[in-house]
Length: 293
Image (cartoon, rainbow, N blue to C red; front, top):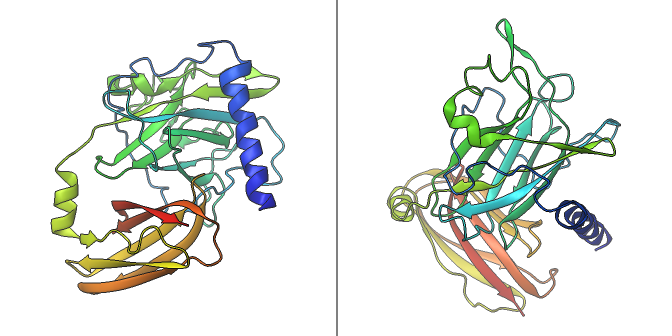
């Protein structure tokens, strides 16, 4: 409980800096915040199965930090998308990617209002042929019933943007953000807008299968679910608390096509609302709210 409380107080403090202490509109938000966020190349350094809320910054790092905040929204730019998975990765200060561990890699679950806060650093640059790639942060976004987005975030004033074939493309204009230097650290804001795909859920059911609402619900000590798989597949079922912290993993296995009954033993968890996310072949298929009395 002490660790969770510390994280909560820390995030609240950062949120106060971003939303209250700084003057209104100090940050340069996406220039086209009511347009769908455009895609970009994934690059060769993406890794699967990065832990949620993994600290991006190694303990021995002592330089300036970057605080990036924003919201995940529907294309109408009014409806927040909660429980969306934001998968961030980037180079370190020297322009190198950690391909053996989890440094400068993390997953974040968006809050009920679609918000997120990322604590990281300005990524270092590296040569791509004879040209340096501009400083950038990679981002993969998944949410139930929304098309998956893979993109990159760039920074205004970077002299290498113009010579970079991806950052200089016209579709990157709403992903070049301004930063403000406050007492040696950097602050920026980046909202993400996804296009809802109403046919996606039906397509997923046809391709992958389906999972039932848990029963009973509400429950006190445990609850059950039935999952039906239409094909042999890799399956991951994770459970998160109301603050977006992962609290349990119900399933992580390659399963043959078929019907399976699962049970979540919740005796060690507090009363409250939990979110279950089922991913199949690294795609979010369904989210379920669990209510423990």
